[in-house]
Amino acid sequence: MSDIFEQPDDAATPLREEERRALKLAHIANREQLNAAEQENIARGQEWALGRRRDWLTERNIRSLRRHMFGDVWRWAGRLRTHEVNIGLDHWQIPAELRVLVDNAKTWIETEAYPPDKIAVCFHHRLTQIHSFANGNGRHARLIADLLVMHNREFLCYIWWV
Image (cartoon, rainbow, N blue to C red; front, side, top):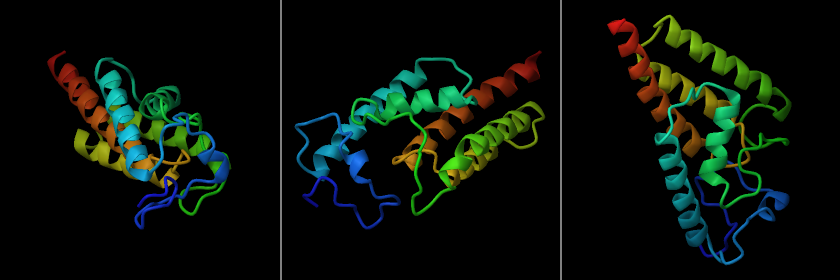
């Protein structure tokens, strides 16, 4: 696939023209280079996230993680989607549904309603259903689910020892 914006067959959401123009890296000429640049940025975002102890269950931190994962490549990184796509909720539902998801996950953790792994899976599933961002929702949801498992285990171990 040589065209930088040609969508692979398994791409969930094609980029709109205005999103394509928001590419920060002028040297990118094909999809392989774009994928490599995004992967490098995601690795830096992961390193940033793992180097911080945060409450990942806030809308602000969810967007901040997103910005660190894609912000070197795309100008729209970290901004919630403002248009309709072929999957996900209507864009106007995103802020409210994201808030509900965060509140639900906090309740699941505090009440130990589910094991940490199940909380992460449920969070990941709903976050990808909401489809908060223009692109890269699956990659973002996988990383935040991993962070939740790590944070959750520490939280539950702390409660058990207190």
